[in-house]
Image (cartoon, rainbow, N blue to C red):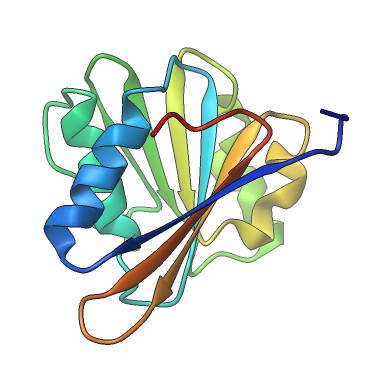
Length: 150
């Protein structure tokens, strides 16, 4: 695999419960230091995916949308930092010190990551795109340089 090679796994879920299960399966391979970038339209299930991660990591609380707080932290097997950058502009990112949460022994999840690319571009990361289909159906694409264990 070359330095620019990426692995892409595509999944389809039909109920929220299946999205939670997929997130838990994904979490089982996390070791700390990972960055997970979550993309998708409003209502796609990004926060649902984070809830599945948190539960699988044994976090102390179930995540809620971080839109109004920007970042929430949860304790578990690995610390989970959950950022929601929906309302932020790139110029505001320095105020939240996003770079301070990247690359330590935790998992950092960023919803709406596009405005913050310079902060995580040097780190190994997973990019997860969640697409809305009919009803509760979702297409979930997981891209990384590291294999995702099914």
